[in-house]
Image (cartoon, rainbow, N blue to C red):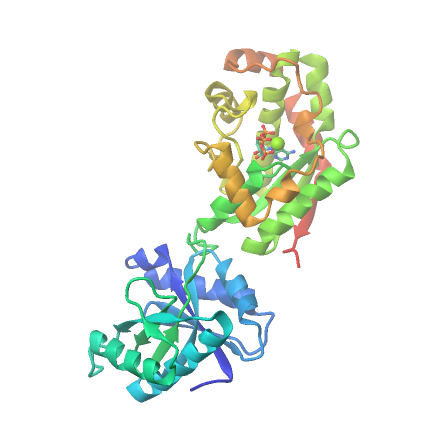
Length: 396
Ligand code: ATP
Ligand code: MG
């Protein structure tokens, strides 16, 4: 038995369903796993028969490795495993040791063996493997009993060509597709709950992201911007480092407030945000915009408002949260770790100059008429001239 190295079996989610493109997706997934583990020495990541095998030095904390791999999109589940030669005696010995450790650590009293013979040339069939190994475990661990209905431990024995694997846990990943398999999108990232979730969801489908954040300094504080950077860092924990563009929207907001009807302020500001984001997206090879908008959530997210917003740009706008309930969005935010930061009370640029009665059913003609009072091109170019770009690295 190889005691020096630790083994992790990584299962691909949807990647496994890909037909002819499967090798490409698997290669991308292996590449992503290698990337997140490259900070550790002597880690091996290999593909074999539809699975990915990760070997790490024995002194590395397995929970740390599982944590890293589980954040890689495309990973369905991970099992810390023991690798032995495909020989029933060897498997039996390893299974006994494995169970002894579980009895000691977790007080396991009952077990069941789930055996699978991926190597059909192996001379013993799965039910017989289960029976043989089960008998060896019972003999080696006197306190254990078999319980086929509700065992404390379901022990998997996976017999493959040359090597076999013993494991107990399947730790779930997020699924999705490997990053880099679906282009790049520009997410409009605020400090709220929704847009970080939207970014995460698109990244989970394999899309690389870049972000743009608007502020209204000095009306919005530096701390508000830091909060968005903190959120971006959490997202980077899933999709690696990315760029965030930061643009001051205040002159545009002031021009709108001075020249246009008050109730149209929000929708007009949103159209400017989209246009600026579109320009930056084009410069940075982002093929679409991503927002955290959600049908009916606020005045600017009624169906009519979304249509008028979309008319300001040609680039497609993806709204992955469009039909979700807030409570479900909040659940995702909690599970990916952005929620606590999102609810910190710092004002967003959208709350500056918030109209008392924003229009919920804007008409495009009226909005265009209001915009005709503004020098749209100049306002956009001036805002872009104020753009700063920072690199967001994953939080430690
Ligand atoms: P969130 O929780 O993401 O802030 P929200 O429910 O507060 O969303 P709005 O403030 O209307 O809704 O914003 C809708 C979307 O517009 C956001 O999800 C985000 O994509 C984008 N957005 C809003 N404010 C900003 C900002 N300051 N910078 C960049 N994008 C923004
Ligand atoms: Mg917001």
